[in-house]
Image (cartoon, rainbow, N blue to C red):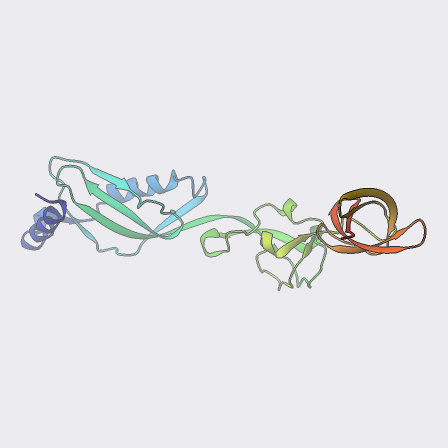
Length: 228
């Protein structure tokens, strides 16, 4: 009998006889919770499972066992879907759940303006439901120190990796090496930075003869100047 027809028959049995259909048993609920807790997605975090259809009933699985699955490519995080499959009766039922995963994350301890260089007093760590936060939220405060905010944040707002920029790797007055590149040639020289910059920024550099060039920060202490 085709799988779909057997599934429909199971539902029909549920309709005709409540003895052949049951709400999600407590022991199966606990098994599902353990299945979720072992998922690499939650990575050992404290997890609470919310049943989005608490009155869901399932057909009997007489003579067989119920397997717990997840749809291909599914992520057990926030609103998710668990699948139950009876190995004997060949039915498959979707169980919608809302997974709450709790852990530490970093927030602003006060109002922080755009361009603020973050220090210890600017941030703090709190615990909360990570599933309702952006995926890039910082979990470790060390990842924020000495970096620059790319937007202003109100007190208590979470800080994400994409909210931060590297602090300046070149400061005014720093000696730098210049890599000049032109058509069919590349030479290097020395200069002094006239403006600060992070990697990828354009900065001004004064050469020993007094000439000022503009180039891109390639890495700490190295400026690239394209002469083409």
